[in-house]
Length: 139
Image (cartoon, rainbow, N blue to C red; front, side, top):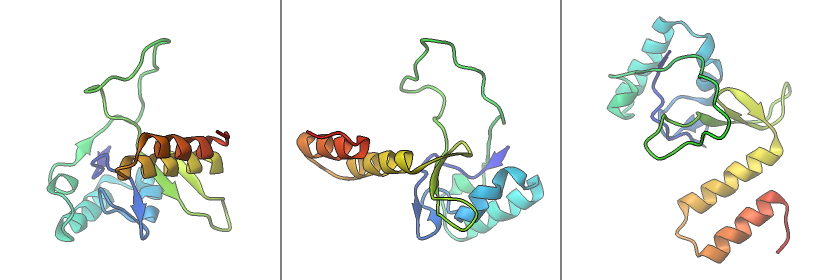
């Protein structure tokens, strides 16, 4: 599937800061045809998003092979899942979408906590405290 995703998936002001797509575009991406995807990718390129987002679209398979038990991801392995935030509306609650599958508030809190840790130059104790709060643990 054509995608402008550059694996920097974080929503700010209604857009992904990595590829530039709106949250709505991300939500319907799998339902779009290749022509519609190419138009959006060309627009993103004109708007100044990274060249890889519009000139060399990534081709991904729509299904992943099942993971063998005991097999773990390692550095340099296949790219991880696409993670995006879906804001709340009348039809559904706020959620984190991991490869298009919605997960609820607890996962939203965990992902936000991990982003705080990753974005900040924080002390180990502060990182541990953020993680414990996100997991709902005291200490």
